[in-house]
Image 1 (cartoon, rainbow, N blue to C red):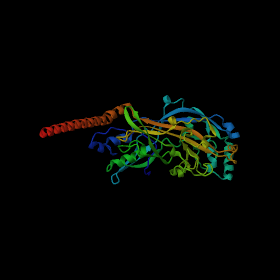
Image 2 (tube, rainbow, N blue to C red):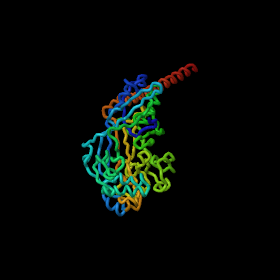
Image 3 (spheres, rainbow, N blue to C red):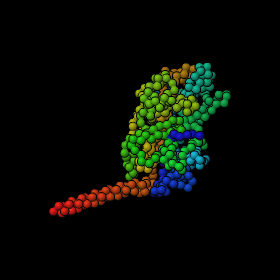
Image 4 (tube, rainbow, N blue to C red):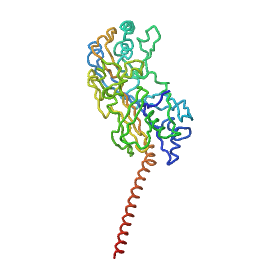
Amino acid sequence: MKKLPIPLHFSLSFSVLPPQSNSLKEAVLEEGTIAFKSWVKTGHRSLQTGWIFDVQDPEEVAVNSSKIKVKQRGPYTYRVRYLAKENITQDSETHTVSFLQPNGAIFEPSLSVGTENDTFTVLNLAVAAVPHLYPSAFVQIIVNIFIKKSNSSMFQKRTLKELLWGYKDPFLSLIPYPVPTTVGVFYPYHNTADGVYKVFNGKDDIISRQSVYVYVYGASFPPFIEKTRVLQFFSSDICRSFYAVFGAEINLKGIPVYRFILPSLAFASPLQNPDNHCFCTEKIISKTCTLYGVLDIGKCKGGKPVYISLPHFLHASPEIAEPVEGLSPNEEEHSTYLDVEPITGFTLQFAKRLQINILVKPGKSIGALKGLKQNYMVPVLWLNETGTIGDEKAEMFRNQVTGKIELLGLVEMILISVGAVMFTAFMISYCACRLKSVK
């Protein structure tokens, strides 16, 4: 069972709570409350959009170790996080609730440039992993027999559906002993679940409920968020925690919110950010862990050479992106942020942007990789998962929360003004009385 910290799967589990003491009861995660109903199955539309890096010069790279020329293709959009939580179990002694979050994705053709059958030239995921999974030259020679027999190379053509959700790899299928033969960036995903998670339900302490809840979903923080606060998240996708810091004040559908952003320091080298020391697992390619902008999550992915970064290697060391042409990093399109309403602590909008890369090393015993003369951090795709409060709920929020807060502010100003007038009148009367008594 996973203990919290938080996933960087953001979601907007928003509901307007009734005022005063009833709001505390309705904020508890237990059967029958408003918070529980909106928590079990969120009512917003969460979308995950992807762009694939289509390789334009596969032969030149494999034979001459030239620069990899990529062309970004997309967007391809899926609806995600639409399934209700399962196996919900309350523990009255610890005031916690445990659950599973089922995974699911539905392709959205109207929000995509093509279909799931669109074809791309991409890295051969299985071939690229061989030098990492089997460092022994003898084993690589054996494996190379099956790679050659299957006519596999460094790059391959795959459809969007195959690349994301899995395909039977031809060379793995030839190996005469039991090995997983299905490969995909997100495989397995469908019919799986994230968890088990356990969070406080707020029965004894609503502040604990909210702080842990956001650590898991990025949905609600404790109320009265200050600009100096650092917001913490955990992502089960990449097996690590992240944090966000205040960036700006913005107006979202008439609601004042604080925008918190994922800082460049989150992807810094261990020398700059000691929290990242676990994500530098080798010393040669990382130049003794001095390079920055990518994090090794191979231990989270069964030893495969998977690295994450911001899209287009935003904020990464120049050496990492140097062997790749066709990238255009920019802060506006490629940064991660979440917009939090500071009074209630609700997240009303977010954008989670990450890039998936595979480290490819030369392999003298692997025919498909023997032409390489350098290491490549090959970008495969980048993702943008977004969610925004709907117009109807935004109006509800303005009417029942923002409007009342503004009304309270107006009443406060009126009371202060009335008090000032009364005080002035009192002082004038007092002074007048003093003058009369002197006369």
